[in-house]
Image 1 (cartoon, rainbow, N blue to C red):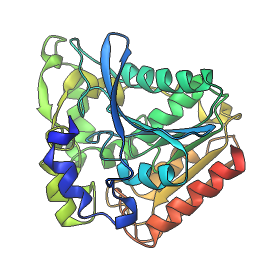
Image 2: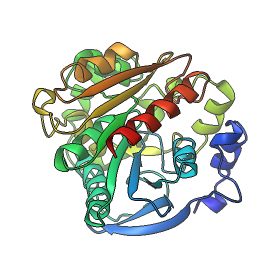
Image 3: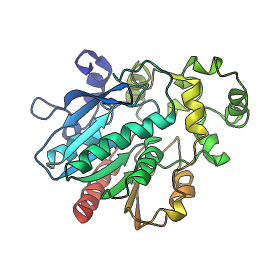
Length: 304
């Protein structure tokens, strides 16, 4: 488990002190069962009526988003950060697809709602569209928050998501034509996505790219295709019930603001957009980091 993982420990030393796990505030590591999978979660459990579920994206894991979770836990909220299948320390014995990611998020949200909790979902990077899809299934949640929301049906979005324009235009077509038995192979995620844009801090980037349960891991071709070829459960024009906050990094070298705005601008629900000044895709730079934390706290207090 994460006690034996050096990458997140190295990353902690590069984060602002207020965003670090410490001896007083640290998550409890647990496993839950979802559709035959053992899903590892970091849970910062508080006596709160509000639970916040934080979903990572491609190349992430539940511990990587601790810089999001720690300030929320300090504020007294329950925070749950799952390792989505393929990352972190979750276990499974079958081929997985993007639907499994949605089911994991949905299972956690459903459990918390059944406890009578106010539930908010936060999605980072590709976790933004994932959080949106989970919200589509549970429109009784209190709010939806994301840093990015990427609709892979749009060619411009695929160009920025892929490692280069050639892969975006021709690589997916090639992979879609592979026989199904070949799609179960693993390839380094860095081969097909622009992992160099993951974070603007070069020292952090070196740490993250070496993390074998995160950005330095492999991905099943079948999973990758299932995510790229997926469609939102509800089109944004019909998404009206759940309030939405987008806290988009202003200096995102992977997916610029306009890429997320393609989908965000169509969302029909009450929504707000905050651009995080000087923050990269992994938004740890100031003043964007503090702007993000304040915006999220204000949003939760308003809708909890």
